[in-house]
Length: 593
Image (cartoon, rainbow, N blue to C red; front, side, top):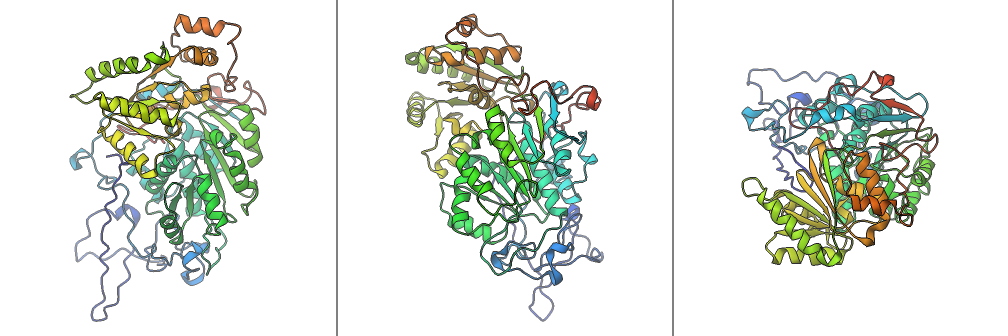
C-alpha cells in the first residue's frame, strides 16, 4: 500500500500509559528496539528487553542504532532546553511524550501478500535502467554503491527503507548517498521520478542521527533546525515532508513542513514542538525568519529541490536572502545539495555561490527523453485544440481498463485558461478538475486527491504541477499549450513514465511555438523517436533555428560549466566496472521521489 501527501490518512493510535500500582503516576515505558515495535507484545511471563545504557528523555523511549538518547547533544541528565528550543530532549511541547504515528499504516516490514500487501509490478521495466549514463566531475569523487547494505545509515533508517520496500538504490541514489555521507557538497542533475527525494533525505537523517552537535539554546521560542530543505511549491514541499516522515519514523529525527497559502498558526505550533529538519517554501520561510520563529544558525544540511527554478529570476532574491543574509553558516561549514532535472549553465553559475568544492553529478534523463515515453507532436491551430483534445480523450476512454479512464494531465499556459478548460470538459461529460496558483491550498489538495483517486481522471494544470510532484499512474500528458522553454517541456512530460513505467506525451504545436521546433526535434532524436517531417522543416528554417539554454548536455539535463561536457567520470563504463549492477529495484516498488 502506497501513501503520499495527497491521499494519506493518518490514523493516530491512542497511547495507553500504564500506571504504577497505588500511586496513579504513569510508569516509564520499557525500551523496545525499533525492529520489534510493530510486533505483538511478548507473553506475560517474558521478561522485558534490557535497558542497559539507554536513557529516557522526557519519558520518551530511547532509539536503537544512532539514537540521540545517549549522545553528547542530549545534555547532562537529559534536561530540557525549553519548549521552543527544538532540542532532542527539549521537546517540552509534548512530542517527546506522545506516541509517534506510524506513517506506514498497516504496511509492516514483515508483511506480504498474506497481510493484504500487494507486490504487483505495475508494468515497471526495470531493465531499462541498466544503461543509464552517469557522469561525475570534481575532486576525489567517492565511488558509488550497489546496495543499501553497503551504506551505514543506521538500523532505524535501514528498517524504514525495508518498510518502503526499497531493495536496491536507484542510479541517482547509488552516487548521491556516498557523496553526501562523505560530507561533500553536490549539484545533481537527474530526471524527476529518479529517486532524488530519498537521495538527499537518507544522508541528512543519518547524519542527524549519528552526528554530535552543540546544544541548542534553551528557554526561547525560536527553533533551531539542523537541516533545511527548500522547494518551490506547496505541493512539492508537502510531498517531501510526507516522504521524509516515513524515512525518519522511529529515528528520533523530527520533520516539520512550512508553506504559504494556509494560516501560519498551526505551522508555528508544529515548530514549537521541536524540529530537526524543516521543509519549506522560500516565501513562508522568509516570513518565519522575520517573525523570529526560526533561526538558521545551526543549519548543517541545506538541500534545494528543483534548484534551477528556485534560482531563476523569480526566486533568486529570496534564496540569496535565506542563504547569504541570515545567520546560516557559510559554505564549508554546512553541507549543501542542489537537485534538479535540468541545470542550465547560467543557473549553475548562480548556484556555485552556495557551494564549496562541490561535485557535479549528472544522471541520464530518466523517463522524459527515453523510449519509456512516446512523444507525439501534432500540428493543431488554437481554435481546433478543444475538439482535438476531445478526440484524444474519447479514444483514451475506449482503451480504459474495466471502464476506468486512464489519468490524463493537461497543461495550459494561464490560470484563466485552466479554469475555462476544466469547465468546458465538465459540461461535455469528462470529469475534470484544475490546479493553479490562484486556487487555495485546500482546493489544490482536493483537486490532486480527486485526480489520484480517479474521481476526476483529467487534471488541467499550469506549471505549478510540472515540478517534482509524484502522481502515480499518469498515463498521458497533453501539452494543450506548449511552454516557452524546452526545460519546462521536459519537466511537464516527466509527470508520466515515472519509476520505469511507460507513458505517452502529446503536444499541440502551431506557428506560435516555432521557437521550440529545433529543441523538440533534438529532444526526440536524442530519445530515438521519430519527429514529424513538418516539425523538422520548421526546425531547419534559418529564422527559427535557435537552441535552448538547456542544450550542450548531450544525454544529460546539464553538464558541469566548470569543465565542459567532455570532462568528468562516466558511470556505466570502465570507471566503476560498468552498468548499474542489475536494475536495482524491488519486486513492486522502488525509491522514487
